[in-house]
Length: 202
Image (tube, rainbow, N blue to C red):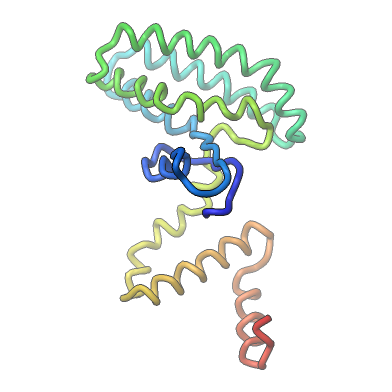
């Protein structure tokens, strides 16, 4: 990770903050934060109480997602142009809305905490306006790793660090196969047969 430069699509996990510290060795990294997580915070407030403010915030985010649905599949250049034309003004209005309501609501109440979360990651939430390759959320990644998370109990067989490392390698190979439309079982079978038959490591 030390040599990586570019953009990482992440959630609000605090561990990522180390990647953008000024004293970090290596090239710069930008963190693009996830609108689905910001949305989830407001949704929890709206679900558990009568909160017109939270509902209004959800509607504003839904308008951004509607634009994203319409540009899905377009080139990154086309996506960026449409975002600059349509999404940027909605983001500007959302920022004004966010500032206004944060000044009116206690930071310690559930709504205040939801608004604080969005404000805390605001720069990274807006990064999708600067690069058409960035998604508004990291749902694609989360869907990809969900089977691994669900399989966590089954992975307890690892027993020690070497076993866990081997499990991680195999899990990465399987998910990489899926991302590249390769049948994982066939790939692993062919690879293991090649190793048994003396295929050179190189």
